[in-house]
Length: 574
Image 1 (cartoon, one colour):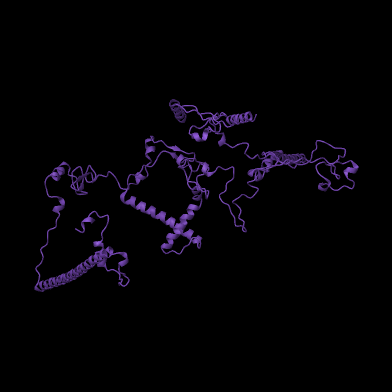
Image 2 (cartoon, rainbow, N blue to C red):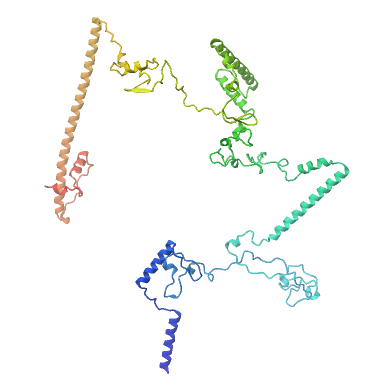
C-alpha cells in the first residue's frame, strides 16, 4: 500500500509540474525556417510586409528587439509575442476618483419622513447623525418626543481618492449650473433696465418733452457700450502718486499696425515701443495721403513740425555767424529775423536770375510752353490720384554718374579714355595721347603709330649752364667736402672698434665653452665610474659645493646630453 501511494504522489507531482510550468523546450528551427524568419523580419522593417500582431490585436513595431517583444519559453511557450508587459498594468495602477465626482451638498429632499425612527437624532430626527453632532438649534422638546418637524437626512458622502492634479484643481467640485444662474440673473437685470428705459421714453413722448426725430440719435449716443468718449482711456491719464503712464495703446476696433501689410519686407514694427516709423504701404504704390495710416514719421513730420525744425536750424546758423538769437529765449525776435532772411533770399535769387538773363539772354526759352502743349500729344503714360498727385508714370531717370557722360569736345568723335597704348590713355578717333587736344583724324592716327619720339620725352627741359664760381666759393666747397670726409672716417673707426670688441667677446665665449665641455666630459666619466661601484660603497656628495650653472655649462650639458630617441646615439662612443 505504501509503495502504490508513493508512485501516485510522484505521478501527480510530475503531471502538475508539466501542466503548470510547461518546461518543455521549443524544438530547434531548421536552417530553412530560420532564413524565412529573418527574411520576414527584414520585409517588415522595410514596410513591405504587414507588422506582427499581438494577442490584443495591436501591431508590434518590427524595430523592437526580440528579447522585449517575445515571451520566454520557460514562462509560457504557447504565448505569442506581445507588448502588454510594457504598458501600464490595470491591476497595479492606482485607481483615482473621476473628474466629475465630488461630495454631495444639501440634504435628501425626495423622501419626507413623518414619524420618528429608532436610532435617529433626538433633536431633529435625522438618521445620518446623533444628537451631539446635530448642527440645528437645540429644540425645547426634541423630535423624539414630539414626532413632528423631522429634518431630512443628509447625503451619505463618498470617499474621494484624488490624484496629484485633482488635489490642486481650483475648479474641482464647481457646478457649471451655478454660472448659468449668474448669467440668467444678469440677463434679467438687463431686461429690466431696457423696459424701464422704454417706459421712460414713452412717458417723455407722451408729455411732449422729447421729439420723435431726436429719439434715434439719443438711443445711439446713450448706448452703454460706447465707452471711448465717456470713460478714461488708457494712455491718457498720468497718476502722480504711482507715476505710471501707458502710451501707444489702441482701441480694440482699430487695425493693428503690423497687420496693415503682411509683407515681411515692408516697414519694420518694433514690438517693444509699438512703433512703426516707415509707411507700411510704401511698396504697394498707394499715395500716403489716401491711406488710413502712413507710419509714425508721416504724422511726426506734418503740420508745424517742419517749420519748427527750419526755424531751429536758422537759429543755429545765425548764432554761428554772430547773431545772439535763441529759439526758446527770443522766439519772436527769431521769427522776425527768419522772415526777413527769407524775403532777402528771394530778392537776391530774383536779382541774380535777372542779371544772368540780361547778360546772356534766353528769356524766351524759359517762358515757352511745355512740349506736350506745343505738340498737343504725348506717349507718356501718367496715372493721377483724385488730388492731382502722380501715382504712376514720369519716373525719374536713374543717374548713371555724377559726371557728364558722352561729351565730345574739339571735333573729336570719341571720348577721352577710349584708346590705350603703352600705359597711356587717349582718343580712339585720332590716337592722340594729349587730353583736350584738337582732333586730327586719320592723319593723327598715322603719325602717332609711326616710329617717333614720345611726347613726354620731347618735353625734357634744356639744362641750364652753371655760371663760373669765384675763388671764395670754390674754397668754401672744398672745406665742406673735407669736413664730410672727416665725419665718414670717424664713423668707420667707431665701427671697426666695435667689431674688434665683438670679436674679442666671441673668443672669450668660445674659451669658456671649451672649458665647460671638458668639465662636462670629466663629470660624465666620474658618474660612469661611480655607477660601476656597489651602492653600499659609493661615497657621499653632501660636502660638494652647489652653484647655479652658467650659460656655458648649460650649453655644454645640452651638447653632451645623450637622447635615447636619437638614431645616431649608438655611434657617439665610436
